[in-house]
Image (cartoon, rainbow, N blue to C red; front, side, top):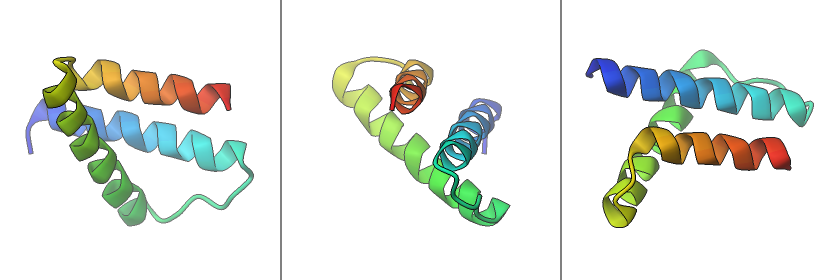
Length: 69
C-alpha cells in the first residue's frame, strides 16, 4: 500500500471510531476497523472516479455527514 492510501485508511479508522463512540457502541477490534476503513476508501475512490473529486474531500464530506447526525 502507498503512503496516501495508508493516510486515507487512517482517517477512515478515526471517523469510524468516532462514530462508534458517539453511538455508545463498542469499538471493534483494529483488524475489523481496518477492514471497514479499506471498504470505505475503496468506495470513496469509486465515487471520486464518477464525480471527478479527490478521495480526501469525499472522506471529509462523509465525516462531516457523520458529525451532523
